[in-house]
Structures are given as structure tokens and as C-alpha cells.
Length: 209
Image (cartoon, rainbow, N blue to C red; front, top):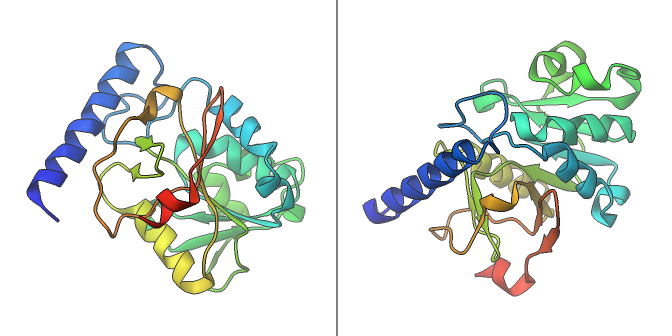
């Protein structure tokens, strides 16, 4: 990875974290620095995602374990979908949670602690119909910036190698949608960006670049 791109990415992360905290957009856990930042409006973004055809048709949904996507995980279980969740830092691989086993407990089961309690660590699991990732920043061409450890890219890469192409959505605050995210060819992209106020579909041509 070129040193310039690494530095550009970090500058953009720090700009977003700074802006979110200054504007009071960042939500618990705080400070948001070093994280996929939770944000005011995360539940609204999760509800907007819930209205999409890709969500409605999905029987299996993969969601990252970060705080801003907790409501997405809860909605998946409430909507009767099998939830596949990455364990934090992928240390335990993937967790599978069956919606039938957590009826009435979806809120708890959508937390990391609850996922370990009610889910099972799974090597083999059904193909997700939709991947949902968190982001620090994303641009209109679908380039996504994570917190810098590469876990989001690794999760997407593992799933695509195992199952082939799968749509990838991210839920973010509007301020996290930026003009340009620095990227390299190996970086995974998103196809749908959902904020509390809008749904942005990435041009399929941009996704292939």
C-alpha cells in the first residue's frame, strides 16, 4: 500500500471523527476516534434500509458487529431473517443467529454479548443475500473507508470468495458521505449507501472500477 494513500485515508478518518464529535452527531460509545462511529440517526438509517427490496427479499443477512449497525441486526432478527455476524476483529470467525431462537429477545441478541449468548460460531452458513457494513466514510462511487484495520474488507472478501457476488450496503450519517475516498484496487466497495435521509445507489459501472 502506498504511503501517500495510507496517510490520505487517515487524514480523512480524522476529519470525519472530528466533524462528527464537534457537531454532536457522534453517539455512544465515545470518543468515536478509532471506531466505526455510531451516529445520531443510526436507527432511522436502519429503518430506511429495511424498506429496500434487497432487504425485503433477503432470507439471510450478514451484518458487521459495530454499534451503528446494532439496529440493523435487530431488524434482521425481528423480520425473521437468519443473521450472520462477524465476531469482533474476526477473532472467533462468524456467528449465526436463528430468528426463531430469539423471539422477544432480538434487542439483546443484536448486541455482541447477546450474539455470543444466543448464536453459534459457524464455519458453514447459508449464503447471505445482503451484506451490511459500517464505514467511517464512503463516496458516491462506492469506495468505503473503514477504521483502518481492514476487517470490513476481509469480511466482504471472505463472503464473496465463498459465495460469489452479493450486494453490499452501508449505513452512515450524511456527513460521512464525502466527495472522494482514497482507495486501492484491492479495497472492497459498496453498492448501496443508506443515511437517515436518503438512499444512494452506486452506479454499477463505478463498482467495477
